[in-house]
Image (cartoon, rainbow, N blue to C red):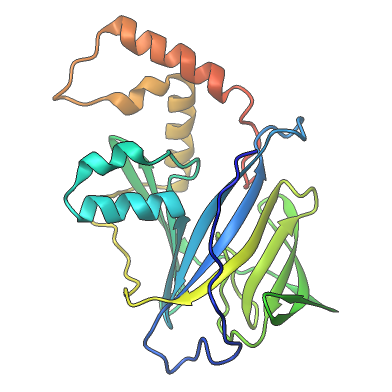
Length: 259
């Protein structure tokens, strides 16, 4: 299992976030995930960022954040030193307009879906535990084919969480499904000076159904994402890429959303 080293930030309960503050928060989560649903040893980890202000949030991998930072610095050579993320998406939750905007990067294809924020039905329990100095409360829900337990902090009064989780009276600091195939744990909280805005200008809108069809196509023929009019790749090169990718993806059968 790949391990990363992350420095925890100092935190100040209650004062760290307030609705009057103009400084967005960044919550860093460690995501542990099981790649093959039948192989308990196929566990990997990635660090993920949730940036939150009083109206909008964005959730993406630490690697995706670093990639965006490098591209904005106009030094693309530095990209060669960054490991690829297994989660090449950005999830925006626009609480003001009740919108969920998901951006998907398939190299030469960039798509976005737009939907209403999922209205999760939460059952709040009496159980409590401490996470990073915050008292949290247990809540349960069902989402996209999985049963989840979440621990939220009322002293961080914003109805946010990792991935698409939302709607609790406090920030979700830990959430995991009943099989522990996907486990998000907050590791650090800090204030940031960068505003949170939906950056979807380079993405083409697509329906959820058509996105599913596209995913099936690239699963059958992975080299579709290499389609670039300015670059010619010989057929034998594309065929080799397809074979290698199919072998690599064969056991990646455990998406977070099952329905």
